[in-house]
Length: 190
Image 1 (cartoon, rainbow, N blue to C red):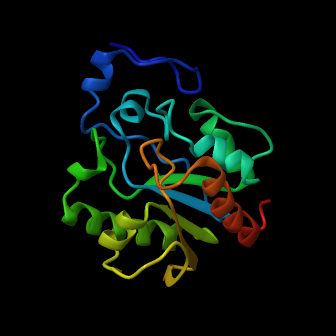
Image 2: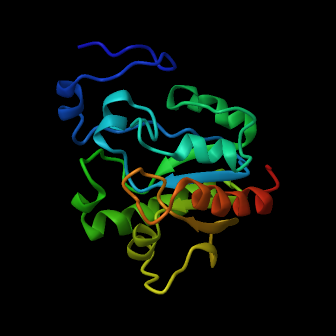
């Protein structure tokens, strides 16, 4: 089955979502970004569409706009526009799964090493890891808290934010906007 062209909004079928296991989503990246957001890994919906944070219940795009990273509300199908605002997206683990709980600890640690190499090569000012538990496991920093970390990845300052998934009930939209806005101010994009 042929997928629609990138940038054209569409909804995958149940069959396409089920078939997305193990698929990847291309990075949205360039050199010298202000912020490189790093998700845990693509969900099946994102794997099917090949766009980041594509599941309709994911709050990433609303939070990004309300926190001041973007001048308008973007959708996953607009993700390539982020680079013009010096923002990018990547993932710790590249393969799509139904839940992040399916990831093995060694995959997260390998993803941390890959992210460190990417940050050294691409030189973002900040790398923002979206998910405190994923960060703790991937970087073996069990006591890490949300916010800026002492660790650096290449020249990049590291910031940990909550996962914006709609499944993360610990953070409601206003809470997410508040903590994302702290990074926007630090990165001077707001």
